[in-house]
Length: 407
Ligand SMILES: Nc1ncnc2c1ncn2[C@@H]1O[C@H](COS(=O)(=O)NC(=O)[C@@H](N)CS)[C@@H](O)[C@H]1O
Ligand SMILES: [Zn+2]
Image (cartoon, rainbow, N blue to C red):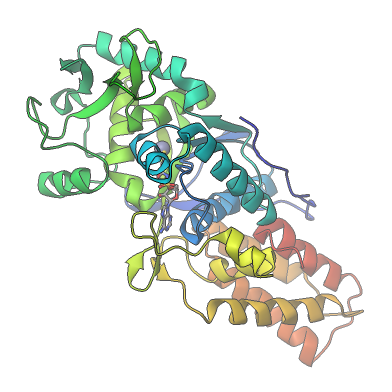
């Protein structure tokens, strides 16, 4: 599937250091040690609505990883899926009386446009579930052949009792698992299951539902297996970084890791990154609640994408935060101040600024600290001045290349 247009990335002098990230599985900040081509998988949108700021905050976070790894001299094999077939999409399409394919295509178009406007580096592989249904069916069949599954009325379930190291990502107790499974698309109460936590790998065809042929018969994929299959296909049995918003820790990433381990015998990723939830009016921004601030709407209102990006960068990626009315004016003022400093003929040396933005981002993507370093440089430039004629241009490039903010 087509991704979106790539922003220009202007190389900076020297190279950045190793990126240290919080890893959900070990609950500690640890150095990422990707190969020369770092493999990264971020779970993509379910396109029954356009990108809201919560989605954007998650993809901004992975964009910072992408930029920091590139600045450290690595290539990045970034893979992102889009869940262009699943129950919520079918339900929404039915509710608004449109074909589910048209709804998905329409919302994916808006999403791509928003990501390009926010100067998010596009994934090397942007992969839809529908176009991957064969490889998903094949993985489900491989898992079935290990004996880790069972059939329930034609549907294929992964038996949680067969899952090795289950809990290795989120370290949740059983009650928490059951509660989150119920809230997030699971079916713990379905009668006939061996264990309420068993999860669907392949749903047999129902009348009126889309279905595809597979080694398991006609039907369609369960949720988790889509990402396991796409990541295995594009990134291999083990890659540097897997993640998404922290609402995916359980069940999605836990069950996905168990599926991959079932066929590879090991963990799917070296690091697991999970992004804090963006809220509005006291609730997580989510389609089901309808409390959404859409990137596309802000853009239609004339808000500069660079300002939207700056507003989000003022929060640490692991923090849960609320979108409030002051976010845009504060980000706007910051953009104007930085622009004024970048427009100066001379300014204080910006090499220390480059080092500061590199070191703050390298320490678990501390974007708020990086913004503070640019604020400090700009304030000095605007109040005391400086003599370095290359500094304004270097500072502007630091902000663009590492933070993705083009001013
Ligand atoms: N309020 C929010 N704040 C931060 N991230 C969010 C928020 N809501 C959703 N996300 C993240 O945005 C991404 C897309 O969310 S989604 O549209 O619901 N889609 C899915 O979660 C699945 N298609 C993943 S395979 C996921 O990584 C999700 O964790
Ligand atoms: Zn996913």
